[in-house]
Length: 260
Image (cartoon, rainbow, N blue to C red; front, side, top):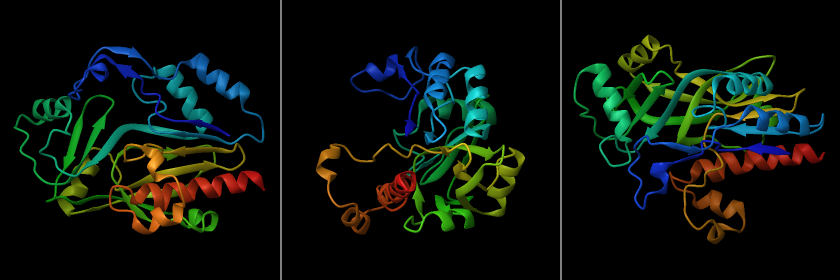
């Protein structure tokens, strides 16, 4: 098994005592083409390769990104998004607010939960409570239900990217957005679908792409959570439900399938 996760890297702002979310000087990170070629050279026919967001978005360069997408059997639309519990708190990156105000020529006055989309070109789309129910739903497709018996639907509350399958890969889970007509129109104008892949699997090549920050556990001090996953499945709250009810069972079944 090869698992690629979070190659985003380190920026100067990350080294501050209290990072403010601003864009800053890139110190290290992004997937280098030589590194990716080394990954692919080490992948034997029976090796399962899993990559998740952010494995090829910024700051990975375009050449490496294109090669990675071909090897992972996916195509990125250039859009990245995230659910925010409150569009009016310190968690919102300052650059997102600036881009919105510059694009729409109006002040950022959002409040309450919502979903923000950001394109590679810096274009921004924001949906608030008046346009959506504020959540991104993770659900298995028919193909996924045949493959995974213990994976539950849940609310996905972190970063994701909008991708599609190519080269015969199969969508085994997807994100669904519950939107008003106004919200649907706003996404349609930006060429963003209201339902898009969350897990893409190419059976023959044994590749998976997870279109989200799945391995990023939502709590600190992970060691205190070691124990029976079933117990955490039962007591999971909104913040941890995806991890325990969707991601952990998904990985367990992928690992079981590898060992058969």
